[in-house]
Amino acid sequence: MSKTPHLHTTHPEIVKRLKRAGGHLQSVVEMIESGRSCLDIAQQLHAVEKAICQAKKTLIQDHLDHCLEDVVGPLAREQRRSIDEFKEITKYL
Image (cartoon, rainbow, N blue to C red; front, side, top):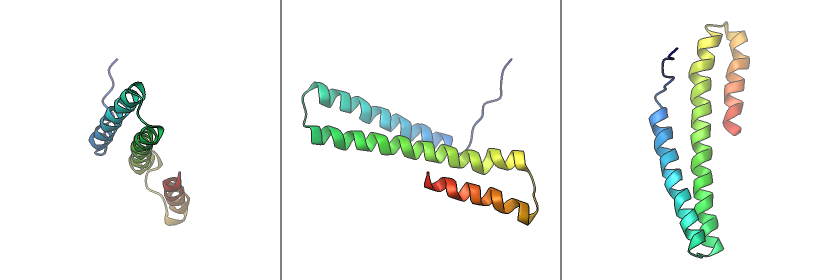
């Protein structure tokens, strides 16, 4: 049973960001193993964390913008307000 790939236009950007974060994470491991300063390591870890968080945020926003819209379908303006507010508030996660 094969499934059709679930792809959105933002997925290549997310993959690129995660690959970059993976490279930074490998650098952090090497920094720790070579005895680099905690400040340098913390800065690199912060960069990895931010890259992963941004990738997650982009993925969630894309999902809400496309998949939720497909499920909900066309709604009257009053019914639509709750969905729009939900999508807007998730930007602050």
